[in-house]
Structure formats: structure tokens, C-alpha cells
Length: 201
Image 1 (tube, one colour):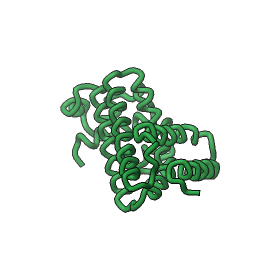
Image 2: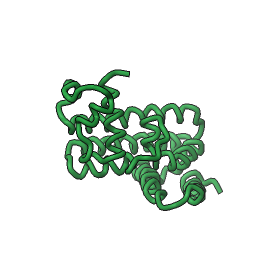
Image 3: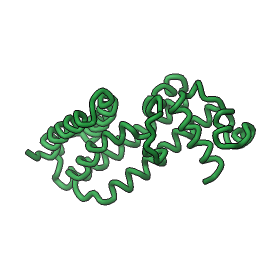
């Protein structure tokens, strides 16, 4: 693993454990076992490191999604995967860092929400990631409509926004339910969406 990638991964881990503001560049350097100037060789400042953390998130989740979607064969398969992945999206930091840590004080979605309120460049980057996510969902909807699996009366962009909102919203709401309760609610949502979009009773 390159030094740059080590810096990004360890910075993300510390941001999730302590928060962005409470994490110093010295702490990141000490955690890796390098000097603080070595970090500045790769990143202009802490803000540019945070932007690289978001880029890292996008790349890791994109690869994860491609891998998981590779075997999906139908619109129903895609909808099953997307909605049943809510518990995974809820803890997306474990996918990003390839771990199952329980000592994070916040999730990645909490981190980027907080950072986006303070940093316009980061907010724009996250907005672009969300736009790309909806574009991919919209592509799937269009493809399903072309195959006659989803009624063409549904606007693909608006339907993509609906599905994205369901996943993002349940990722937040799910924090207040047990895993069993979240599974039940997710299953109920899936049944409703299949009736609505795929006419599956």
C-alpha cells in the first residue's frame, strides 16, 4: 500500500473515531509512523486530505457496487439488492475500510454531512457523488422500462430520486431500530416498491 493511501485510510479512521476538527495532522502522522511533513508532501493541507478521503470513498463504494451488481440478472434482482443493502449503506465505513469496527463515534455519512456544512468544495464533491448515484439508478430504470418491466409512466430521474431517498433515509432512520426491526421495515418497503414499480403482487 502506498504512503498516500495509508494517510487517507488512517485519516478517515481517525475522523470517524474523533471527528474531523479534533483530529490533528500530527495524530495521523503518528498513527502511520511517519513525520508530519511527509503528509504535507502528499496533501497541501487538512482540507485537501478530507477531499481525498471523499474521493477514496467514492472509488471504494463504486467498486463494491460493481462487484455486487455483476451477477444481477433482472430488475427485481437490482431492486432486491439495492433495498436489502440498506444495513450495509448504514455502515458504509466498514465497506470503505474493509473492517467491522464498533468504536467509531460517527458513521461516514455523518462525517460528510458535517464537513459539507463547512466546506463548499466538499459539499460540491458530495453532491456530484449523489448525482452520479441517481444517474446510475436512472439508467437501470430506463433499461427496465425498455424491457417492459417498469411502466414508462414513471419518470426515471424522479423514480431514481425516490429510491435514493428511501435508501439514504432508511440508513438514518435505521440507527433507531434494532437489526431485526430494520430488516422487517426494509422487507416491507421492498414489497411496496415491487408492487409500485414492477407490478409484483
